[in-house]
Amino acid sequence: MDANQYINQNYPRINRTDITMLDISNKNLTNTITLDYFNITLKLNASFNQISTFIIEQLPLQIMDFSHNLLTNFSISQDNSTLQIINLSHNYLSDIGPISNILTHLDVSNNNLTNLDLSDYVHLTSLDCSANPNLSKLTLPLHSYFNPKDLSNFDSRGTNLGIINTTSFSIECQNGIRSVTTPLDTNNPPNQSTDNKLYIGIIIGMGIIILAGIIFIVAVPFEVDSSVNTFFQDSQEGEEGGDWRESSSVMIGWEAGVTSAGDDINRKINFKWP
Image 1 (tube, rainbow, N blue to C red):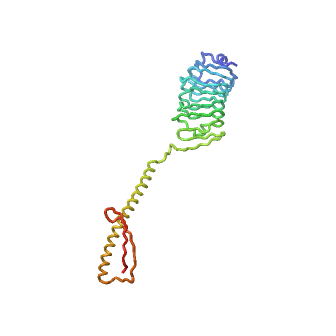
Image 2: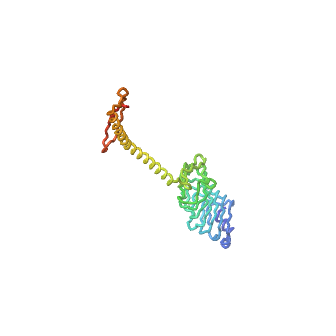
Image 3: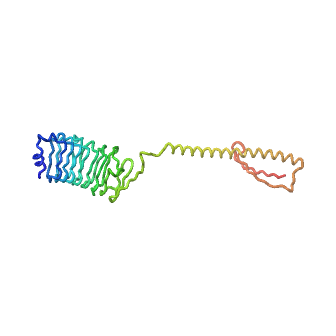
């Protein structure tokens, strides 16, 4: 039966203003349906018909079910901004135009979509785009309530989507098998300040060790020089006293480093052990 004919026969205009829920499902309705003068209708169920086109005139609809029909495209005036839940599954949709600024739930499964742009629907919380075998591009809102990681509210099986990128994680959809990966957990970002403090502490510690090594290398030769000079003085005194024993002489070599004014010299000191 023609959809408009059915509406006019069963819902005279004078009575339409009292209807809050319109259920015309499973009526074998065909062709185009025009819904006007349903001024307080909040819910519409037109599922399981053969409707190919619809026209909606300024309705305060919140929930709409047009599943299991013959729709090839769908768009609705942004003036109908009260729409929150829409079911367009099991149609022949190849394109979806503007819907509603406050849309929260969208079911477009089992259609012919190739591209689905939902970047404007920041209130979206649930999406079913499964069984669209040619769907290869999905654009999600940059900032929204939508969480594709919650697989109970997101279904993309049976599509041509490889990887769905979001601002905080990626979802792999290959051969209808869904796996969720989180390369960066935005709820628990790395503690960069702690890491930076650790790196700075390591660098400062290494610097202190290197500086101490330099001081040791420079200072020790002077101390040895001083002790050697003292030893020679004592040796000379001992030699004058005739205390050296030539038969017990041993050659000992020692190389001194920086001795004065930053000059690098190597000095061999030979002395006899008493």
